[in-house]
Length: 314
Image 1 (spheres, rainbow, N blue to C red):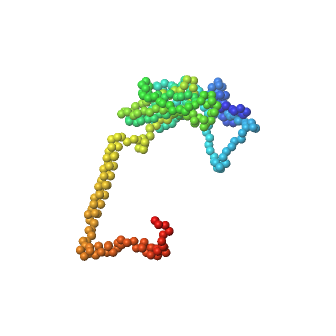
Image 2 (cartoon, one colour):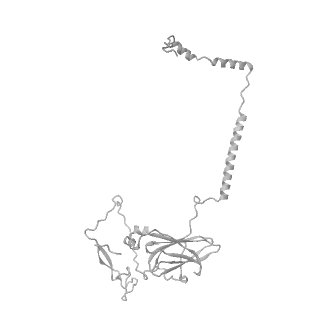
């Protein structure tokens, strides 16, 4: 970790821990200068941790008071890894196909690529089982190459494709090395393996650019089932579906027409009138209808201008 300009760091001893080797990333040392694990024999020694001292003019930290309302305890675990090759992952040595390490389907593993390093892994693919293999990593350190082989590691089965963001120069990238910036630099390299009639053993080879070091998270899983909403219907199934829909619609229409005809057929007919009733009905109709406009005649009778000569001869 680089110290920003203007910030001083001094070591602070902590009792009960072995000393650190400078630049080894936190491993204790033996008299020969090589990294060694912590033992009870050197438990009386002390480990030196850097203490950051901020200058007086350094900006003060800010926070949102609405969010910082709760006082909750938490645990922070820090794993310090030394540089390569001592700090390589626990799967080493796996640089050749014969020393490939086994992976389980549905697991996610944190791994590391060192300079000139090649990682080989082995997984068992069941009968008719489709698999997806994906590696997530920081694209600022270069693109990872992934390829699947048969059990002997000689015949290629599939090559991975990479989806990565567009990034500026490497120097500009590493100057802004924050968690948010790393998230924006995340690349995914993955491949798919189709299932066969018989189960088989597949070997994976993962390598990085020359003289590059990087961490990556490797995940092996079965692909999710296809969604029925996103799946397009086949032409034959679509035709059958349309036929069933039209048949149902026509049946509903026929049933409706039959019901309507049945109601019309069962409707009671009006009784027949006699000749006298018909004659009386015609007379009542003549009395109800008056060819003269009685309302207009009444208005003319009440008008004060009914006997007045008009001022203009129309």
